[in-house]
Amino acid sequence: MTSTDATTTAWRNWAGNVTARPVREVSPASVDELAAAVRRAAEDGLRVKPVGTGHSFTATAATDGVLVRPDLLTGIRGIDREAMTVTVEAGTPLKRLNAALAREGLSLTNMGDIMEQTVAGATSTGTHGTGRDSASIAAQIRALELVTADGTVLHCSERENPEVFAVARIGLGALGVITAITFAVEPVFLLTAREEPMTFDAVTSGFDELVVENEHFEFYWFPHTGNCNTKRNNRSAGPSAPPGRISGWIEDELLSNGIFQVACSVGRAFPAAIPSIARISSRALSARTYTDIPYKVFTSPRRVRFVEMEYALPREAAVAALREVKAMVDRSPLRVSFPVEVRTAPADDMALSTASGRESAYIAVHLYRGTPHQAYFTAVERIMTAHGGRPHWGKVHTRDAGYLAEAYPRFGEFTAVRDRLDPDRLFGNDYLRRVLGD
Image (cartoon, rainbow, N blue to C red; front, side, top):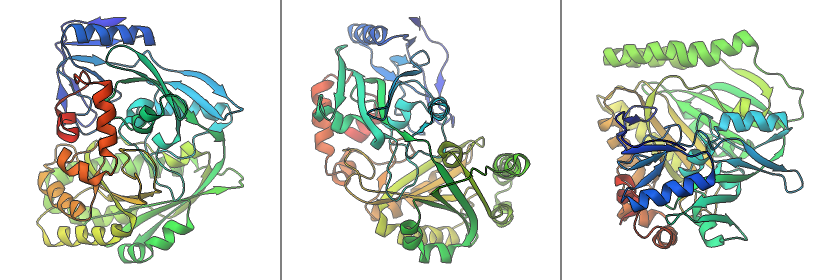
């Protein structure tokens, strides 16, 4: 096992807004090595946190104790074509899983819009895409393997340790260290993406129809404008027709990353220019249609670094809340350089899922890294909480256990399992103390 007993370098997340300085780091190469590292940490009185690629904006993985890096716990353990499942090591990046499944003629049913995260990090924080019928990545879990506070390796599924499985698929790293995940998969399929500009009024007035008529619908509203960009993804009989190499590069790299990076930098230096930049940006992306395998349609490169807050609302409250956000921005001195993203999810049965027990819509707000975000995020959060919003576990928010216990009907079920598996809070940290209580 690779470890450093006196870590002097700080760990930082992708956005750079969270820093931690662990006493030591470990990179176990097997489940047994990980279990030994957990037991040793307990003996030394140190807390333990696994970390993925740092794509969370909260301090969910921060620790002053032992930081577990999953770099050596990667790869596919096995594919069961009869059960249509794949079992994968917890540290495997989603982009490697997606590519490996495609080579096998398989795919996940739904996924988020980036694939840099590890499978354990993405599922533990409730990463999701958009879907009328298909839910988050965690909802596709059929079994998982968990190292608990006493070093026990626990296998969890609907049949084995079902009470743990019911809460551990979105576990926030609070129940133990996930070492492997079994996902449901299906034969690879084609999606046709239709991207087109629409006005804010047209999208919001037709939102319910757009959600019902499309398997995967999402849109982006550009603050300081009445402009939106919409994306509808639906299954297709083919043929495959991916974006042209040059036109795809112009849309996905030059406009969405390169020029957008410059625009954000200019906006940070000269906030008064942001509304003008927004009007130009919102018209830069033209309508296009293409057909490809799922991960090439669902996901996009995200090279412009930002901080983000996202809330899940009852779906029927989404349009009213978004209109309130627009009215708030329009009457405030705020200058917002990033578009606001809106997605949906069906109700699911996971205790701490943001869509637990209710059909949901997500409203996500972003600001360029280094831009003061507190005033904007606070104003948006006030609107979201007034509508019974649930914050994304991996994104900036100020909610605590008192609020969240009311927002989640099965909150007590989660904390009861945590009390049993980790009574001494070996896997605790300040963030978990705030959102789950002691």
